[in-house]
Length: 219
Image 1 (tube, one colour):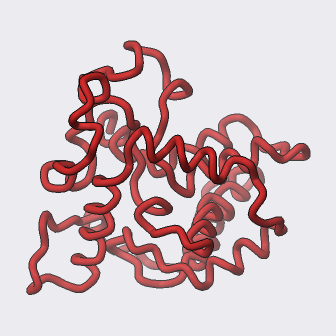
Image 2 (cartoon, one colour):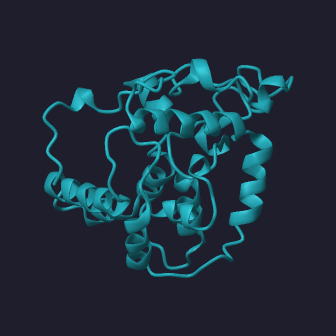
């Protein structure tokens, strides 16, 4: 289990790192730069059309977890190990804190399984990293928001570039189109699975666990 001595030292992002910064810092910034350039309404719709037919592969959950042995999250500034480590660490941490909520422990184990997208020729900028709504003005709470969005095509759209964009005030998260990645994919896979019995709050965790701008707003 990873021992955290100083939790405030985690998720430290270097704005526009130079060659003198660590290779991890440069990798993380470049991943977000590409993400914030290409994640737009049109792109997300195309990803929905490509992936939500659920016609790429069938596998049990543990096989998906094993595949995460080959995935190192290029957006993570703190951990440089295969994602399966993170899966078991998260499940074990939840087991210790919530021993009677087995569904929650399962959510911790599988929450990143959608990252198997990276094994099907998907660049990591549309698989990993923090998520955010598209189709409206980008929040200043988004990581690297000041230096990475200038080439995003939605900034030139007269609707998508406004505060509420294609939404109405207080419409709720369920009405928002999120940037495409492992969260939305796994959520949709579980919804499509006829025998899935995870509670609604578990599915909500899966779908929004990378929506850090929301956390920043409230906490």
